[in-house]
Length: 162
Image (cartoon, rainbow, N blue to C red):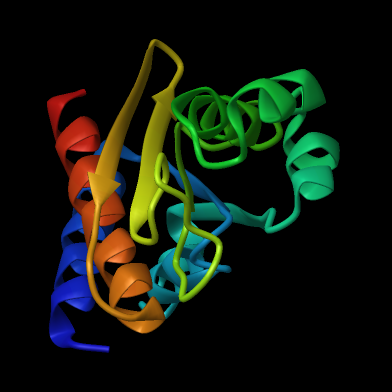
C-alpha cells in the first residue's frame, strides 16, 4: 500500500480527535481494508469505534439491517444498499460517522450495467446521508485501493464540513 491512504487516515484521525468524534466502517468489496488502514494508526481506539465486514448479502441484512427487499430490487452494488449499509452501521454503533462501501472489485462479477470497478461509497452522520458512484479501473488490488482512498477522501470532506 502506498503512503497516500495512511496520510488520509492521519488527516481523518486529526479531524476526529479535534472534534471528539468517532467513525465506524461497513465494508463489502474492501473486506476490511478501510478499518485495517484506520487502525494501523497508533491511538485509533480514541476515534475508531468499530468495523463491519459484510461481504455477503446475509451479513448486510443480519449485521446492518439492510432489508433483503432492497438487495433483491437493486442488487448489492447500488446506491440504496450503500446508503442502507451506512445508516445501519451508524445505528448499530456509537460512532458519529459511518462509511460504507459496496462494489465489484473483480476480476469477475461485473455486468454491462455494473462493470468491474463499479463502487458505491456512502457516508452517514446523524443528520446527513450521502452516496457517490465511482468507476475505478485496474486489477482487484487497484480497485480496492482506489475505493479505500476515495472513501477516506469523502469521509474527510464530510467530517471537516460538520
